[in-house]
Length: 194
Image (tube, helix red, strand yellow):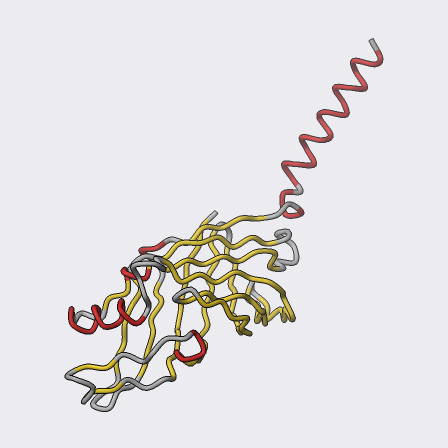
């Protein structure tokens, strides 16, 4: 009988620990596509341009809810979900990104280099990760701003890259009379929920 009572007390203790110490357990958040934005900005010989990602998905995992230290970050962008509002520009973009064979742009976290708490659930985070575009994978450094409020996480930042680093020929138009600059800026403001 005492064994049953001891076993019951142990199980009750485990349940209480899990209920009241869930901050010590890994927390997983998923991207809410409709509440997130990701844009690519660039230049051309006639005007600056911008293209937005309509289809975004991914996961952010924190080691625990107490330190909010990043453990995993995976982001995927559907390449043919990139839209500029101009069909001719979109076609040139898809051709440059080789979208027939490479349906997604992918970022995978590989290392957290620094986490600086700013207070009120906000952090500055420096990470390294693998960015895959048009079949080419490169390791990049990325500065992030991370905010955690209850069951919602917000992630924002920007990064400058060169298209040619990913073996992408900057798109041209009108028989090469309009040329696109090699440098682009990726800006993102992502909302995730548990």
